[in-house]
Image (cartoon, rainbow, N blue to C red; front, side, top):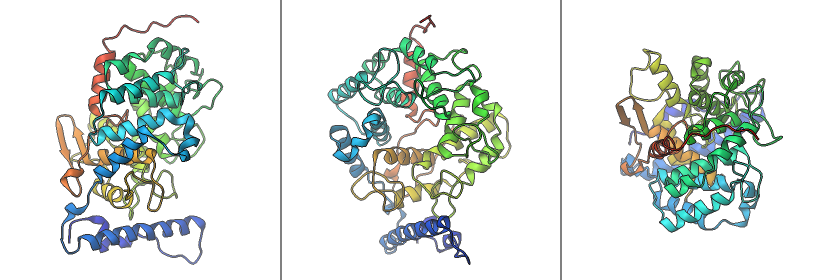
Length: 411
């Protein structure tokens, strides 16, 4: 039988056992494990005669068709995402870049033109044309433009106005509102830091007290919450750690506690990650949780941690790939949260980004790959701090470091 963890009889010991009492949490977990097990068994039957793990295939063509269609036309069911149209551009472009799908210059120019209409003269981007500036779609729009990576794309970004917008949502304690008079949480700090670093507009004034505020969000569990006093969460933990690294203050948080908490979020049977304690596995956390490991690895390596003596991240990379490829691929293209869920562009993006993390290991000049299944399953390398490709980050840094510095002005 092919050497795949997910179809091994030995993995069944990790499944939940019935207790003398039932809770909703236990019932939901057992029901999900049943569905995941059915996916594993179905795949096992497909390959049992061939004894060939290469049959585990990434549906590149189907995913490509789903993504390209999303750029051209969305059904009425996406109307609820009218304030997330910049996000849709980013999710689709990031997925396409990881799959190495090329687009014509004409189509790229159309995307650039649309994103330019989402930018406000006062700085920042809204979720669509005419919408208020918000740090989340600003992050998505800047990432999308950096993925395109042409001078035409870079030039539409008003860096001076962007500086003013970010400063306008900065709070005295170092936190950031997501928009004017909006909510405060750790996403704001990350989005601001990511955008500022990519565009080369970060200043000490912009992030004064921000690292200390971020650290106050780390909980007793080890992960980060959205704001002080709340529950540790995978997405917030990624935002917290990545922001600290972008600001050069990663030394302030408890790395050992974060590593322990994040490692415990990989599900023993499913192989994917959950976002919070006692929650179900979700494909999107393949990146939100999985992306934490290369960041922590770099930090601990710099600190001379002797435990990092093997070539790989500190989670089960093969198990994650198997969950994504066996349980999260929609038959018609696109990826999903978990079996029997609907496909969408959000989960397609973060499942593929997590797959990229699981496939590629890099430490200094040392680089290795762990590609489960068919060799053609290998996708591009995403940058763990920004979640756009390494090439896109390098090109953006090279371009914006040569632009005139943004000088803070009154008004």
